[in-house]
Image 1 (tube, one colour):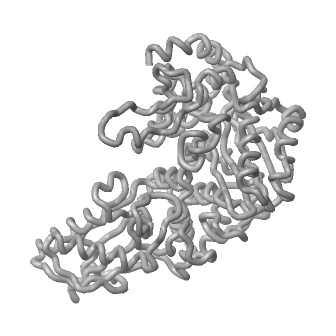
Image 2 (cartoon, rainbow, N blue to C red; image 1 turned 120 degrees about the vertical axis):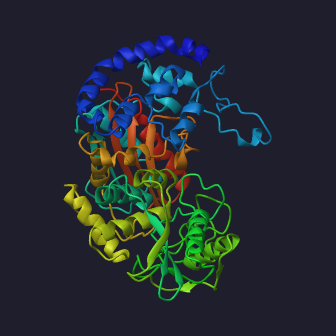
Image 3 (cartoon, rainbow, N blue to C red; image 1 turned 30 degrees about the vertical axis):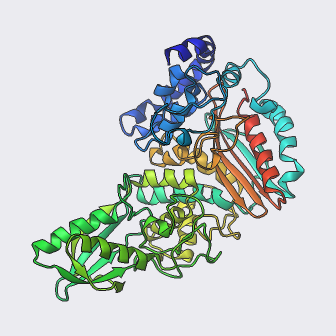
Length: 517
């Protein structure tokens, strides 16, 4: 780190001098928030210096780094050690299989720092830098006119430092948003439930009948795997339940499971699909039948029954015999024996956005419906999301929600709404919404952007992707060399070549990464 810091110190000094006035203003603006909630400054300061964080001397302090290691991985990969770029920037840990665990190469630090210092008019990857005003339209317009982006589109760019819109075309046109819908789901869920809310699964005993009921709490991250780490553990719940039963002198029970927290059809309108399990209040490991933790995977046809059978097996390991589990509903008289809870909602939102987790999106949408007094089904989700966003004063005209994940092709969102959502999450007065920004995939580093921007604005673009057949969308934030944070939303419908459309959207976002005021 000392060698790397020495190599980049001159350019860092120039960049720091250029950014200091706006960083000072940002610091003053966020000072009242520091004593209330650390996450306010974690994004504000981190976003304003995200580009500088690619250098070893700044990377440790810039943040935001969280306890899950999500952005710790970004930090570790960004430090170039003795290399000048294009090499393995992992932790350097040895041991069996270490070579197979190496991360992808990080971008060359030199080109990033050149752009940060403002000495180049060309963005990484050879894309011309985008100035503001008419010049921005002149640069961004042709990129968004690429035929690969199809016949229907909408785009908006907003400066989050000033709140001023810098660019817009078709901003009020409601288009199919695909997975950028998850940004709306995240905002609505955080507004309805708060960032500290947890999803709880419990085991309850019906004293009069001896029936033990596994009550689903709508937590798709509940895991039956050993060494759960952050998620709630079905094994832990079984261990605690068995101990509570033995204290009562009970060693054999009739086992049931309760999924009544949710209502309506469990099947998403897209039908059986490897991108999503049946939407039920009880499942373990998102009902995946393989060892995967994200992305498409084969799913159990009856996730609740599978989770209950696993629970029965774990009880058996602790000396409690059970019947074959069947569906039931816990009564108000049932005594809760044990509970396990998910990570806080802030962490769930980050995971949902980083990995584009459809199961989490549908779960959080249903919890939003419940918190809003709506029925926990797809219709209730539609009403709750719209009501919550409207209550925040966001431009919901034309928006239509049929699910929380964006897998439904009849969903509609405008570029205006997407940028307004991002601006709301950046508001210093709304620190509870900050996980929406910290959870966005980081170009070239995390989630659905980990394999993109290898020759572009890696580390400078943070955005939610969206892809369906004929639909390509991208919405997120970009940090410019002069410490401005821009929110952008690009929606395109009617595309015919998904790879070409993705490349065109990445070029448009990259052009913003070196824009200057």
